[in-house]
Amino acid sequence: MTEPDSSSSVSPPRPPNSNPRQNFNRRRSTIVLLNTPEEFDTENEDVVSFGGRGKGDTEPLGSWSSVVGRVFRDASGVDTVDEEDYDDVESRTSESARQGAAGPRPALFTDLGPQPALLSTGIRTRVNGIRVEEDGLSDIDTASYVSAADSYMASELSPLLGTVHEPISTSDAKHTTLNSINLLMGMGILTLPYAMSLCGWVVGVSLMIVFPILASTTAKLLVQCMEVRDTSLPLVTTPQMVKSMSYGDTAETAFGNRGKNAVSALYLFELFAACTALVILTADSVHALYPQYSLPIVKCVVALLVLSTTMFKTVRVLSLFGFVGVVAIVNLVVIIMVDGLSAESWPGSLWDPAETDIWPRSWQNVFLAVGIMFVGFDGHAVFPTIYRDLKTPTDFSKSMNITYTVVTALYLLVAVCGYRMFGNAILPEITQNLPGVPSYNPVLTQITLYLVALNPVAKYALCLRPVHSVLERGANQRWQHIVIRTALTGAVLLMALAFPSFDKVMGLLGSLFSGSVAVLVPCACYAKLFWRGVGVGRKMMVVVGLAMGAGIVCLGVLGVALGGSNG
Image 1 (cartoon, rainbow, N blue to C red):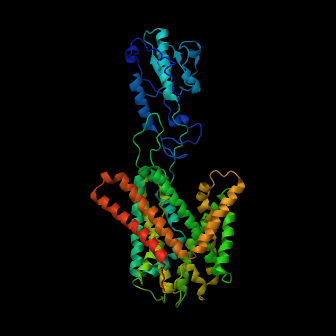
Image 2: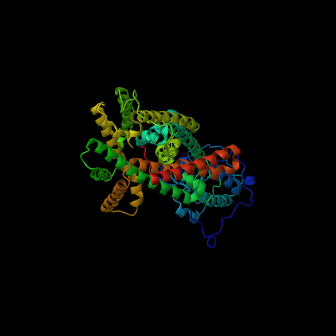
Image 3: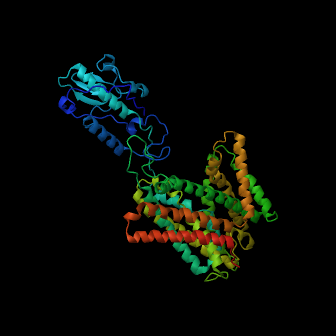
């Protein structure tokens, strides 16, 4: 906003009596013209404004408008009142200005474009939307006062914000629950029977019950942090935020830009590790179908295949195959039950169970299982988006309870059935055991393996796209994009060759990344924002959450480093 040079301009004179309330008898109240979201919504431009921190992430600014209106009233002595004749303010012309009633307009207007002008209608006068009534003042005095008010209103009418897009929440509790279940039910379910074999029945079932309770609690703490608002709204600068719209915004609210940058870096590394797991999973599924080919060769072929999907200018085509993941998960659960019930004897039978353990054979195995189990309960990086799309935010807690109850039941079903069917002979991916059972229907087995192999191919480009966006900043040529994406997929392939075990990659994802994103960061943000205002019970809950998060990270990483064996 341009400020006039005080050395070269003289403030316009005010009416003889400095109190305008004694000069103007208003039979009606006035309306102060303010820049509200409704006025600027016609421009359809994306800007960062008061309601949020990103394009399109904003909300109504009624409280901000009232603050500006009150400041103007206190400064000029003009009362704000009802909204009569408000709609026709901007349609007024500068007829009286051209007739010389108000004299020359201040130079400040030259940088502001068209502004609502002075218009005389009988004894009533309008000044930038302020309807006043003359009370015996001369034309010169009235024009002087109008010019002074015009100058002040020019500074107030200088657009502080552009287009404000109010987010429209469209999801109800049912949609939120379904979206959350779909988010959590990923390919990590394949490793749950193996994780159960590492822990034994007692420890394994206990972890499968404790982890969803922990994740559900931290999800609720996270959305509470999102509702923290910045109450120190400056009058001349655009506030950075009013409320958090994403996971990164929440970290920024608590810890500033450094916190947001740290969380963003953690998220990018998590995506890179997830892409490595997708390549390993696809290669293992293809190798189970065609065991005559060596696994490293299969991984190279898979890397070339997924690399081709990253070259599309848009991922809209790949997004259409998102249903493949849902079909693959549902099919896997059904096939495990059908195969287990159809087989009459070991291996792979629910009627004739395999040898299992009550307690873990070593705690080293439990450490590895911690990350493998917990990765399936982490959806916290996306929960803020789901929460903001909820029409009734108070339903989020109920939706989380239902979501984690359903997901835990399905996870336990797969883990218990898989461990009972194959016992300590279970492989890191339960799909690797299916082709080795002669009594299973080979057609159903092949369909399951193809679905499991196809799903990561469709997800790879979607998962790696945020990493591409960061690395390709400043790369304007198409060939530069190709080189960057090829090099990145090459790095993923090297990781897949260096860490060939799918269970270890999933353990690293669940411990280092999911433990931080789903537990440590939400608890730390909550402690930073609410510690002084909560009771002892809530403080103890946060401390326990931080301790459990640190335990998941440290023990899980240690388990990946030491390795584990169910043999």
